[in-house]
Length: 129
Image (cartoon, rainbow, N blue to C red; front, side, top):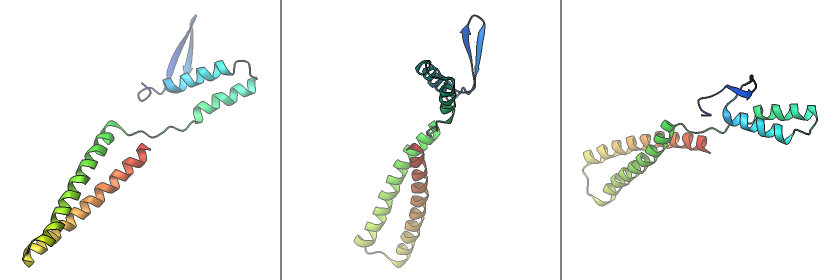
């Protein structure tokens, strides 16, 4: 609900409706702080009300980003295995110059793909923390 709602109308009873600018979690924090600070001075209450607005929100990966993150892990592993396979061919097989050139080009392309996917993986990983 927090991801969809950014404004609440709170029915207090007896025809009283409170207009609250925030999501449900913010409202719960606000209400809890009102109960704890009920005996405090008026200036202390103002400070607490401001604090709930200023709490930084932790970045969370969207569903699509989570899927992409998991997919990237698998793709990176696959590319690394393919890269290792090509490198092993260089050391174990007696290759013709034309085949060496072809494998070198493929190896370069795999390096580029691996760099791109690793960079994106690090971006998503940083958001997740």
